[in-house]
Length: 260
Image (cartoon, rainbow, N blue to C red; front, side, top):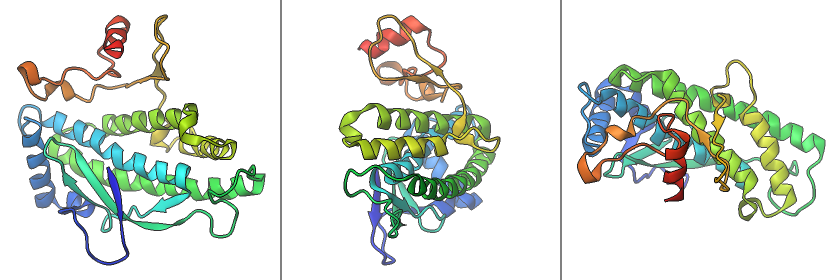
């Protein structure tokens, strides 16, 4: 969950993203997060603390993308503005400030159902390209710090985020209940081309295998390139098990899990 606060200095969440760049504060946060997940920072399961952090942080990244594609809104992503709290089970809730609208009188806004012109789409691509690059730098700094504390691979962490981003974008395009108008669908498709541009430096554009099974008639499902290690959380009847997008699952096991 991500909430937007006003322009005043008040905030409701205990931690700032900048705390994750401060060694002592970062370790306190990750240690508490590990405890909530039944893991141990610096011991067995430490890598899982890092990979699961990345998976949880993808929630924030997806909020930034959704705000753009669905509401034509830029959220503030600065380290000293974005704040978060732990939810008691190892997940995180986020808050930030509204940066500005993508419109600015250009016709990029959400009103009406008139098809956007090529000029408007080009302006929008420029805006989102700048946001994408800034967001990558933001995530990259955080992941480098978390990786140093947990031993997790930043390559794996970025791939976990890319997977959730691509699943989100696929859902935005495929679900008519989300986009509702042809104009909105065109904007979402335009944005998706930018977010997933296959440039060398775009960590969001990692390629994933699509799940295919003769009995699967559900929405598009991408298989992660790496396991997030969530199966290390809990034990016995409270064990997490593999996620339905885990690469450790074979096709039949995945299908049975999805049908349940």
